[in-house]
Length: 259
Length: 342
Image 1: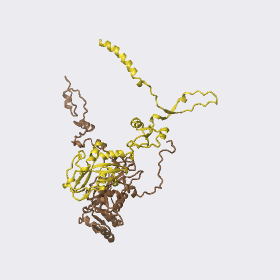
Image 2 (image 1 turned 30 degrees about the vertical axis):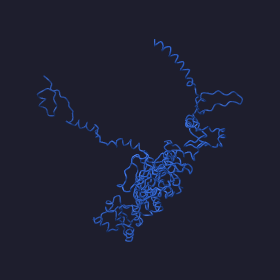
Image 3 (image 1 turned 90 degrees about the horizontal axis):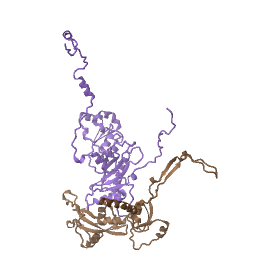
Image 4 (image 1 turned 60 degrees about the vertical axis):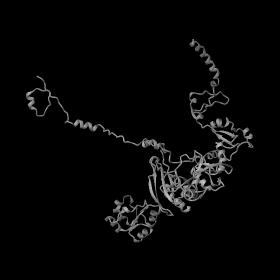
């Protein structure tokens, strides 16, 4: 009984499959172009006369170019919103086809750079859009807002935190942050003071002299003499340390929300 | 009657009388000869005993191949766009010499590491490819003369040889430990003075014939003009050997076209200009060992100062005097001429 059922069902399913899979059966055009050159020129014919017959030797070709081997041309687009690493609103960008279709055109972050669109997006006034000072500014802000910068100060000689200490500490971690872009808290942080060892404070970094963001810093005391050094705390940046100034609680909350 | 197969002996007339035999002609060589010959023919397969290799040294070739390339080329990376940026995504910043030294001074300041007198090292990376692609420049050790001396901590005792007393006095004034003439050579031969106590041997060309008997004792240290130890002006040589920067360029054992020079150019408490001049002198001396081929010899120069692990890239080309190459290049005919039937 079951076998006879299966016999009736299978042809039906096959037809329904055919109907449903109409899209897959569409023949796409073959976008291949081979540029060839005749090895032996065809015979010339008289003006107004019938063309002469081509011989076998005229059908010998040499391959000049195989367009499949060419590099795929980039697609020109106009951005309609800020894209990190590419540009701001209204910027003309040239990207590879995959990135253009999948990451920009499909989500509506860009449009094709046709003559009509160029006119349309020429003088676009940005009102509710976020505009950043450069194409890479947002990326830098996002990365530096998440880190805990270790500021290593001496355990024996007296010091007060200055912008150049922070700049040097950034440089040690391979972040280029010049001194003028750093603003330290108003209250002076003096040392060496083992009460503030491992405590954290916030500094403000200004990127391209426009955007500002907060970076969390942690104080470490370091002794030149190996024997007097404090033990290294593995993964100290994973657990947020105690704040030096209680007013920074709000900044900490805001940052954790952004994460 | 049975036939006796017996060995045919030369004087076996006795045998021939008593018995009929069928002699077997046996042309075998003396006992053991065949075996000896066979042993010579067969190749001896030496059994290699498997040595114990610790786990972290096994597959050394694979480990070396997997190591990142020492020749760092960041020209494909973009230049930074913003003033605040993440350095790993962009090209290395080329520091002016003064700024690099200042940056080191910041980290070594009493507020931070508290080592303001630490050494400043120049790390010069070289492309050791020779005139031919598969041949490489040999490792070299030299002493570069520098304008501003500093304490290098090396023990450099110099012995000078010259016939003229004035030259000997010059050498002693410059800082040589011992200076002498033919009598000093005799003392060495007697054993009164030991050459082992001296690191450098310099000589004036006039005393060279008398110095030849000591060649075997001196070996590599025998004065020669190539090393700069055989010269007319012994004061200059003595000063250079005593106060100059001793450095050596060594190729990496796996990546043979990469060579490295790490030399101290001074201390951080020295004046920046003095450090720069010392560095310039070192770079020029290294550049003198350049092979005769196209392409750069010094790929990049970094300034390092322990205990900091920071490296600041400095433009070495500012200190190299590039001569205008007006000489014609010799183009070899690669069979582009007329073909001659042999």
